[in-house]
Amino acid sequence: MISIPTWGDRRNIRVGIFGGSFNPIHEGHLQLANRALKFLQLDQVWLMVSPGNPLKIGTEMAPFEERYQLAKKRVCDRRLIPTDIECRLHTRYSCDTIHLLKQRFPCCKFVWLMGADGLAQMALWSHWQEILKIVPMAVFPRPSYIYSALNGQAAQWARKARLPSRYATILADFQPPAWVFVPAPENSISATALRQQRKQLLEQ
Image (tube, rainbow, N blue to C red):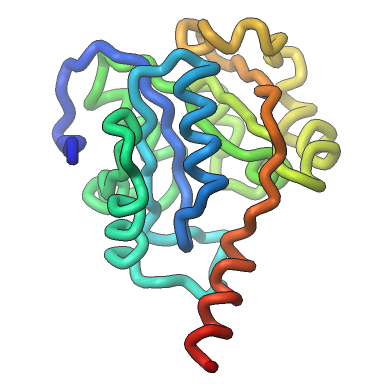
């Protein structure tokens, strides 16, 4: 498994950053990552397992190491790299993490990856406008979230920066703010539902 060094390096590649709790990682996450590799013509996708999510306080959250190790077990493609770098960087907010990644990997061309559910609630994130200003972003469909995502505060704020999907292959080359909505099959798999199923099995 390829490791992402905390101190950085000068690798010259196109990287999708896919951050999340991955509680647990599931097929929907992997489909999004693989779609991003192909549609955005990325060299790698970093599955950045978050040590915690300020918006998910009170959610049944598995320990970080358990979530991280499961992500490593589920991934087979060498271009998909589960990483604990956010934990090692000791950052809490996505904006701070992105700033450090850009500083430490100055030759990488990063693209932020998220589902429509993330875009729908992005205005609740800390310094969300700064994120849109420092990294291009690709948004993928999620059932029942598309309308609220595209009509939400974040999408409306960045509406002039939205590019037609045909530009997705060169999105990494655009100066932010720049984002695309990537056409893709909608995946209804829910991490919440998976956790509930696991809990029911353990109780039987």
